Image 1 (tube, rainbow, N blue to C red):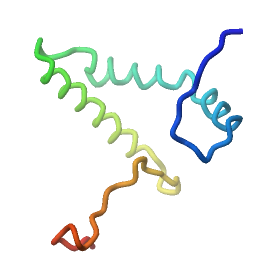
Image 2 (image 1 turned 135 degrees about the horizontal axis):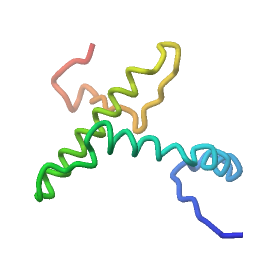
Image 3 (image 1 turned 45 degrees about the horizontal axis):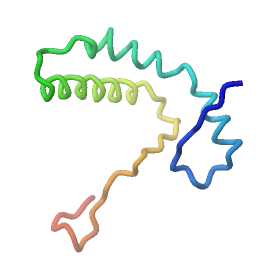
Length: 97
């Protein structure tokens, strides 16, 4: 048996629930990598500059997230993490609708 560790900030989860969640998601990241690399050109970097390559890959990730969000059914509850920042009235002069 090979030992492994799971590091998390989900303090309110019990260890058993955390391990079940971790095992359920095993193997799903490969599909994401495939789409990023082969369909969204994340594997073909534009040049030898680190900043430009990082921006290119970030755009591929943003594109993936937008396309994935569009596929979600309207009845699906989506939880954003971290929650979107909303400034209170004291730190912002703009009112949010």
